[in-house]
Length: 137
Image (cartoon, rainbow, N blue to C red; front, side, top):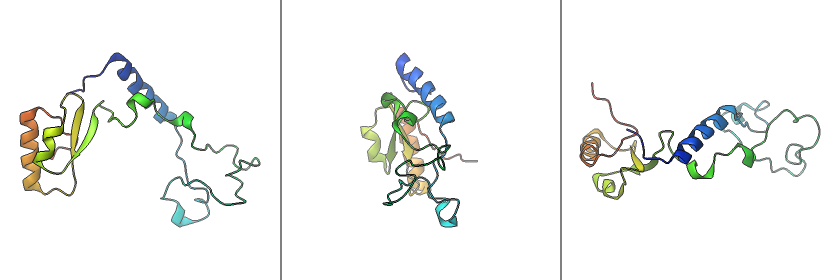
């Protein structure tokens, strides 16, 4: 089941996939020195004398910094790779406001199995795509 997209949106989703494949992982400034900084990802250097903040010297010349050139096209920004807009659902009542042509639901991880089954059945009736269905064996 695919979202109803224009040719332009399909082209931009492919472009976004290509851009993201080339995007480097932006690491924290001192992640090589301190173990506790390895997992937190990018934080902008804010120190007064920080060389990376002022982009000084050849020490960081090979390191990419986050900038607008790495972002995805504005039309498809925030969309799921399938082209749907994600809507987080907590109960059956939340399904009423979902547009099945453009939006897909993601059931909250805090939901128990009983309520989850109810949400999945109602979504199937309404023809709504579920991004994280529970596979019952």
